[in-house]
Length: 292
Image (cartoon, rainbow, N blue to C red; front, top):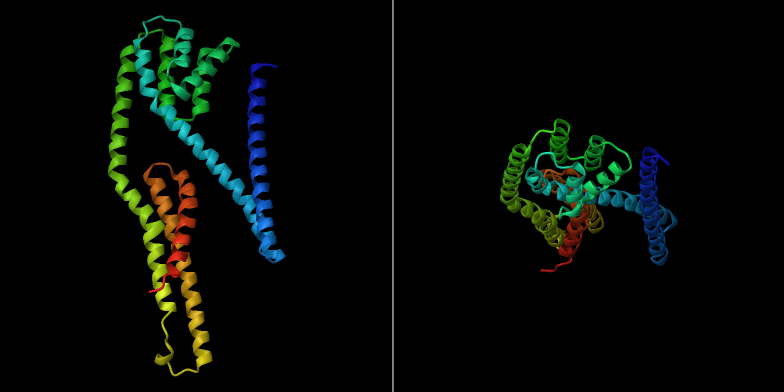
């Protein structure tokens, strides 16, 4: 099997493993939903809807979890780029590219070092240095890493001494990371304020207000008959409860989106919503039961 065929085979195998894991998790959640429905004597229609919803929800959650894990790994690799460039600037002119790759793969470069280890194996199988470095760019899918790899390709092709360029780029990356850390520190109060409000304050206040209003006796304020009065009051309370639930869900979703967008990673909005939605509904339900 050639290198290209082996690469395609590994990609297909990776997708197959993802599908197997996601469908296994989906079926597990579906089976659990059916068991819960049978135990609670739920109707067949609700059991069917709940089990199908659990199946697809589990698959979607697993997909976003894998996406989040991939993003976390990319950030971990990007954080090591300045150190990598500083090390590259220390190598003397004319040193073998294989020695550089061996050093990067064995040094303390974590996941980024693993990428150079793969590149070294590719070179040993006959792949050109430019292609091996280009494959690192394709696997990482990061502008920061691509920029560093382009510098290394340029240095390899020209044979020039790019130590000063590597060092200047490393200092630039360090400065950029420092600015980003300061920005994140400045926004952390706003982030946790949104978390606190979306998960606790707003649901608790709405729950307390609903509990207080539902306990008030309005019989002396209307001249309607008792039956009609109770029916109208119950309808009003049901509409109010539905409106508050919609508002809580909307607030949690918007807070999740703003927090993720603030961090520069909109894909994390789904994960934040997975946390905020159940917590906010639980707090709202608890607040409704409080008796003054």
